[in-house]
Amino acid sequence: MSKRLKNNIQRVQDELQMLGFSYQVIELPKTTHTALDAAKALSCQIGQIAKSIIFKTKSTNQPILVIASGLNQIDEEKIAKHISESVEKAEANFILEKTGFTIGGVPPLGYLKKIKTFIDEDLFQYEEIWAAAGAPNAVFKFKPQDLIKMTDGQIISVK
Image (cartoon, rainbow, N blue to C red; front, side):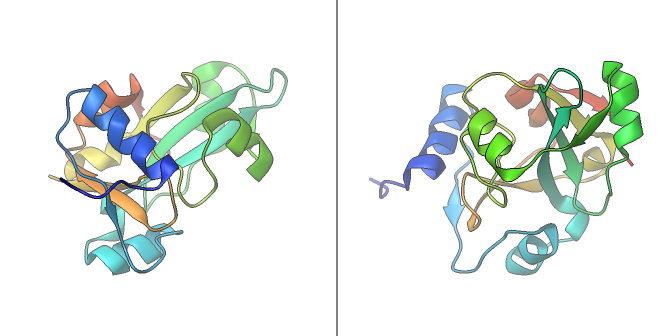
């Protein structure tokens, strides 16, 4: 029997299992707060890091999740075109309130409520990718095509 993970990390593991995935969350001795930190800690390419960035719509204050390759800078105008509303990066309190997770550990799933999600098409060039799992030192490895089932997200160009 594996040891029990910390609350937010366990929430991600439980969500993965509930969705039928056998992926395992791991805790690392070093932080994976940024995509570069994660790539170094995992000895993988920075593009294989699936960073979960929360935006906020400017007029309706709705959260928008963009899961982007660690190599890419997100073009907010592209996101705005898909939802017909301007967006801005969300602040830490908004992210915590809407997702239940803090910056640096935001996973692609396990949120308090469903969030409109966009998935970076560039992630699909990799066989496996890594994402945060509820804490700045927790991650899990998975196949990019599983992001669709995990998030019900739409694949787009985000850069």
